[in-house]
Length: 541
Image (cartoon, helix red, strand yellow):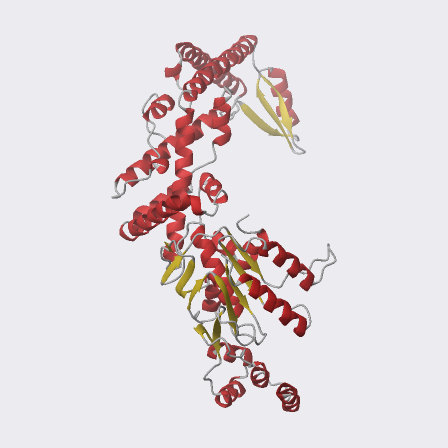
């Protein structure tokens, strides 16, 4: 497994996928089929990056063409059920034939649009026009976006419809004549459909109508009665004849639909291919728009076991900060196989650094551009991320127990090319044992193939010269007295601290102690001074 569902959730990769906006049902299927590219897929990954880069360039040069393309995508319906029915030789309905005709019209529009672009479209995304289907479903060559079982399909059908029309014309003429006679006899005005409505209180008029015999009861309300022209025996025969002809017409239309289904069966593979191609094109364009929207760059795949991120940004955090008028501080980090420790004060951004490393690595391996100025990475067999949220009521495990269970599993894969990210290792137990376990785990992982990054508050974990020590700058260099005065004036402690927090990572000596900003931050938050002074005494001991 490349990543568990928990890791995907904790890295917030699902937020990135939610921003990949596809419009066709086939594009949605392509999106759901997205999988990470592994070592054996390196050539395919490079090709995907090339395709995204090309579409990004095309969007910048042909923006309105792509707006029109995505509007076309919105009209595409899911016809896979109809295609399957064609393959099973099940006769299509008129509605299904209409939808296939519309689909072929969409292919024509897409083809005309893509012809305007200077782009050698990948073969598996090259949806092609289907003139055979267009002519099959539009024998009159009308170009109208409707479908009808045309007379051109069958001489028998043409003859039947002609007979129906002639009889209906004769019937209409008879009805008009009957209506006119009654109007003349009774000196009353009937509606065009041969009906007349009278008030129930008009007994005299009711007697006249009933005595005449040319009108019969139709319906009534609590105030009125409606009569209609009575049909004679000849008219009843004509109506029955029309009903018989309608059945013949339906049978002929069914024969035509069967023939059309058989004809479509000859090219159903091409229909299916075109639908798939539209889905792939839809997803590719969505990836390019994502890259543009987050100012992403193409990550470079390297043979060296490394992750090198320059000015990387965590998009979800960046979006949240932007809503409050704030800017995400880009993070630069270079990682090699072995162990790297990240230390820093609470609120200092250690967890965000971990998430950024994991998120950008996952995005790159899923074939997406990344929000950074530059990124180089080697392909991984897996990404593991422990966020300290592992308490399991089902198994009766504490946070620490669940964390150790996961660590045991991932340590077994440490000789693979993987990325192991752990936030506050062994935080769920007492500090002395937590330090000892952390020290032992890091010592075990430092010579392994995997790249391991942990955040910690424990002093001494970085004393081993083979373990890199990165530190979040945090509030280094901040004048606490001035910041305290600023907080007093504005009355917004957490906001002010965040604005002065520097989230960038710097490499420090392996014996550098973990920053102890907690007391200073607590003072800025307004915790009682006598408590803080007592805490400082305990710390000094």
